[in-house]
Image (cartoon, rainbow, N blue to C red; front, top):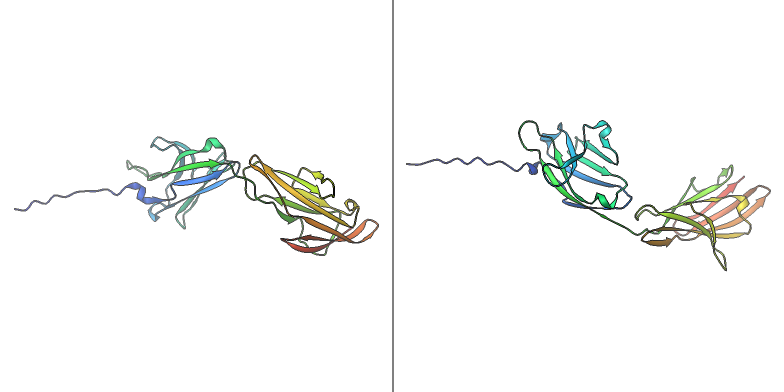
Length: 237
């Protein structure tokens, strides 16, 4: 006599989701956290909650207006089966455990995944330059601006521009933008640099070398040379 015993097993609901279990963010900056899901959950609501238990506190859902609550937003890209959580202006107190989940209709448990968010401070990187206008020979009404930016580092970041001098460097401004105009050139050659600093330290940029070619009244032609960018001519009037 044979006895057939049937075992009914359920697949863990977390199998519907897959993503990193640990991510690291930087104070003051934003972080994006991706979560992939299978095609059976395209039309269901996704959410992001604070805590590691089933009673975690909802922070944002895809059915919220604009998919946003305060500093946190969520975007569902159904065509590729991924929803993306973005947390802006990170703070140390944001560190902890969170759950990514999908609202499941009926009595079934929601598919969920736990992620640990770590928050740290980061030093600034060497500032990089950008011209306010395409660098080439052009006429401008007043000035050309060079901005410097540290693409890494905990926010806020303080920027300061200096002019290089033989004895003591002269501070020009406490912003990330340097305005170059005819009236500012007292000599034929000038050197400028900026510094970026936060609570982890300070780093200087490379030099911006400016050489006057010609000057007539309120008009001037000069060349800027930056090692990482190249040599460019500007005409101001």
